[in-house]
Image 1: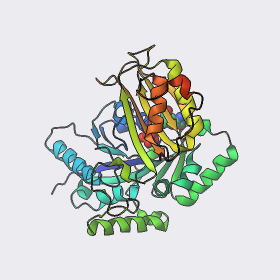
Image 2: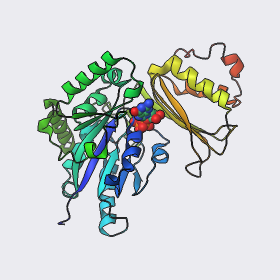
Image 3: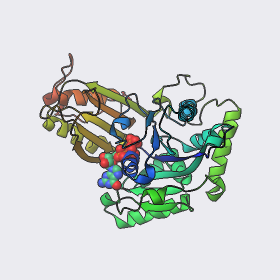
Image 4: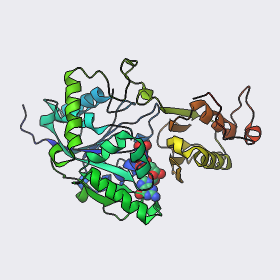
Length: 376
Ligand SMILES: Nc1nc2c(ncn2[C@@H]2O[C@H](COP(=O)(O)OP(=O)(O)OP(=O)(O)O)[C@@H](O)[C@H]2O)c(=O)[nH]1
C-alpha cells in the first residue's frame, strides 16, 4: 500500500471531431497542466492524434488503436498501472495529473467503471471529472444518431461547447444547450470560443458522482460492473459471438467503418482542394470523421493537416514541418454506410495514382459522386 495522494485523472471525451484534441492542446499550455501525462486512444488503424497534440511538457502514451470502451479497456488498465509503476520507480517524470482523451466513439461508462472499480488503480488515481466536448454545429444531429454521444454528455461534469463561432442559427444553439441541460443537469456548460473552457473551469471537478447525474448514468455503470463480473462478453453494440480480435476497429457498429490510406506520392493543392470539397459536400452525413496529414507537390516539406466532421470541412492548416519521420500522406476516415473502396477510388483519381482498370480523374468527374450500388 502507498500513502501517496491519488493522481487526478480527467476523462476528456466527446463525439468524433467535436474538438477534444484542440481543447487539450489549449489546456496543455496552461501552467495548471504542467506535469500532465496524456493518454490518447484513437479509432482507426493509423493514429494521428499523437502527432497533432502539441505536448508542451509531460509524457504521452498512445493506447492501442481500437475503441477504449470495448477491447482496449484491458490496455487502458495496463497503461495506467505501468505509468504509476514507472513513476514510483522514478523512470518517468513525477507527473501530477493524467488526462485520457477517448475516441469519439467511446462509451464512457466502461472507461469510468474500469478505473473506479479496479482495486489498485482506484487507490492511485482519482477521477477528477469527465469533460465532454460538444460540437455546436453537429451536436444535435449527433445526439439523434449515436447513443454513445448521449452517454458522453450524460456522464459529463463539464460540457465544453465547441465551434459556437461556426454556429449561425442562435435558436438552434439555444435548443442544443437546453438539450444538454436536460441530459446533464449538473454539468457546467462552457463556451470554448468565448474562452470559458479554461483549465480552472474544467479541472478539479471533484470525484465522479453518479448520483448527481440523470439516473441512467448509475444504471450504465452498474451494467458495466455486471459485465465485468460476467467476464465482459462484449458490449451491447458489439454483436455477441463476433470475432475476438482485440484490435478489430470495425466491430463497434456494423454501419461504421474506419479505414486509412498512406501514400508517398505528393498531391497537387488543386487536386486536394477538389477532393476535400467534393467528398463532404456530396456525402458529408456519411463521413463521421476525416482526418489527415497530406504531402503536396507545392510544399512537400510542409504537410497540410486536414479535418472534416460530417458536412463541415475545417480550414486546412500547413505545419512548419513533418511531425515525425514518416513523410507520407496519411488519411483516416470513419464513415457510416460509405464503403472504403468508393473513397479510395476517389482519392486515387484526384491524387493521380494509377490504377490498372480504373478511369482517371477526368472520366470519374463525369459522375464522381455516385456510390456504386451493392457495394456497402
Ligand atoms: N471554428 C472552430 N473549429 C474548431 C473548434 N474546435 C475544434 N475545431 C476544429 O475542428 C476540427 C476537429 O478538431 P479536433 O480537436 O481534432 O477534434 P477531436 O474531437 O479531437 O477529433 P477526434 O479525435 O478525431 O474525434 C479541427 O479542424 C479543429 O481545428 C472551435 O471551437 N471552432
